[in-house]
Image (cartoon, rainbow, N blue to C red; front, side, top):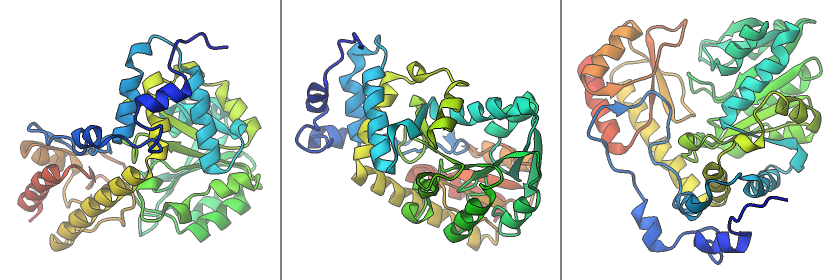
Length: 372
């Protein structure tokens, strides 16, 4: 039993203004956190952070627990797992919390790497799992994205061998932002999961136009050999709190847990913020609308500038600069705009995160000057 003197559930809900309003926050509290202030220094558009920040209810939940951050978060962690399981339609032993979804990706790499397996992934793609697995002994099979900068599923399937132990799919892909058509991905996973484990990283999926049509959690519910990972860092605006989770079958969850720090590693404020944010559907919906508006404005500008770009479905846009990325980064830096790192082999392409309206106005001005 947890000896923590933390508020019980009723006290917690009352303290966060959520007892009657279903985790909503009184108007004064909501108004005070409606919009982060526009920064006056360099505009940071390289890390895919959510500039609109956490929901007011998440902020209130964290504020309510500041006095007990010297205690472990186990009671609140259990509630978060229960809430995620309910949301995803799975059992609690199918949910695994992590210090961001990155800890889960690294755990998979540490789990599989020592077996010296083949792991199939797209390039360019997100490398956190891949780098850890490779250092642990895995052989990485990199499959170039297709002409639309999407995962080339037929080419990935053709690479499967007796030594393949994992196919890693980031959907939407980072850095390209492209989304695999759901019927194609679902058919692909149903077939290849008969031969190997499939991990679908849905870190950015809640930023997309149609989350429900594209999530592959139903394949976990079907009992396939699949792991789906999510994070509270993106649409929920909690990157600094480091909370993520996986949905998979219980045996895989238990195996991954053995390569992680454990539930005590998740921080209390992040846990209560994530729990509150799960219930703040209106804030998540509004944030998605604002991200899409920023994407559309940026792609409209790139069209005007005759720049090719990948069809974006995350909180960023990946586009062709027409110059070495190092040169483009420097020129943007001179205009006060920080953009993302290089993504080999596409070393004349750039990824720009969607920022606040004022930040994007500055970024657009810089792009017109440099690319126009």
